[in-house]
Length: 466
Image (tube, rainbow, N blue to C red; front, side, top):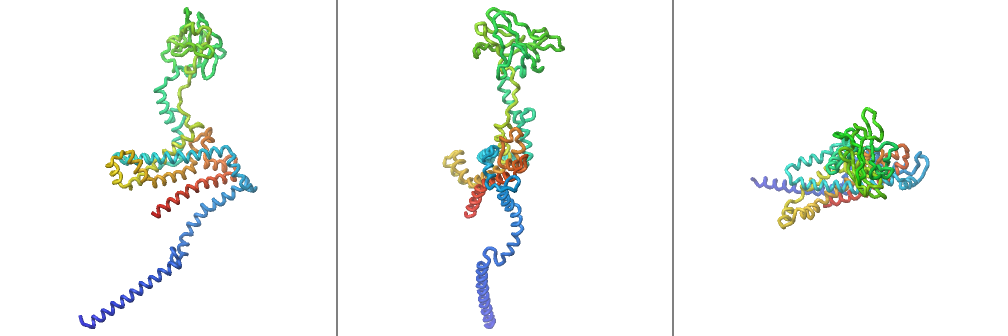
């Protein structure tokens, strides 16, 4: 290469450095100017505003305006013309139905998220140890694909009082009948104006005292035909020295022709009934009727006493638990909610469990820690952020629970199962329409949700800082 070419090349490289330095310095100045002028939005903030405007308008129309209008409407009476100030809020806390709804909301917030989160944690940890864990997760998560309406209809049938339709009572009755003997003649009762009379609790007691040597007749009617299978003909009891005897039978002759209070030849005996001798309110003797309906009690015990047929002889067939009654309706509905949302909790916790360092768990096991210690001291603390997310999400969800309660609870128990969201609907659109009171409930419900949302936002910010 000649000297002239070397000289031109050096001049070219020096010019390039100067121009590059100028661009770098110019670029630095432009970046600084951008930071001073527009900050994060850059030199054209109006461009970002144009893109955000549709979302802001939609947010204002669907969120901000309803909140402001609800606050405004809650200060007026049912007609919307009379200003009552905070009167609707005072009426809200003085109403028994709303206080019941508030109490039930507290139960929901405490029980439903906790149980769902605990079950989700247990399922997530245990399914890691089985081969068919994926299939189990799919089955547990599947209720999430069902709408609240469909789930409410399903559990309204599950909790049906009739064991022939309600799965819950079908199982419960099957377990009960396995360990408890059924009543021999459910529904049976004495004839009107007979010597046997109701004595409370479903039992029947003779009006007069019995004596040894005078056989007692205890006729009954309204016996179900199915309870008489294999029954023998009744026999009139005879006198026995030192005993009080008698007969219990079905005082009904098929085809007619029978005589009341008389043991006719073709009338069936009621075997297996318990007969008690009662004196001074105490049971002093008891006997069981034989196959022909007769019984015998020692005269030393029964003479001068009254005879009683206890209620256990006539108790109606066991029909299970009244799941949707006033006492159990709220726990029953919470059970249906847990059935739906335990799968949601399990999936989120399983995702967090997948990120737990396995070397920590193995190191703890090598050091001699048991599985319970590993779970309690390592797994749960490492999953704490995920557990908080699940718990807070479910708490917000149950604060506005409505559809499950509205569908599952029958009309007779709807007041016992009432929650704030349902009361809001009933106050605003029910028989006694009062939009002022309904708006006050809506504002109060919003105030209950805000602290939970605040805790959730703080947690999200802390996660971002990390």
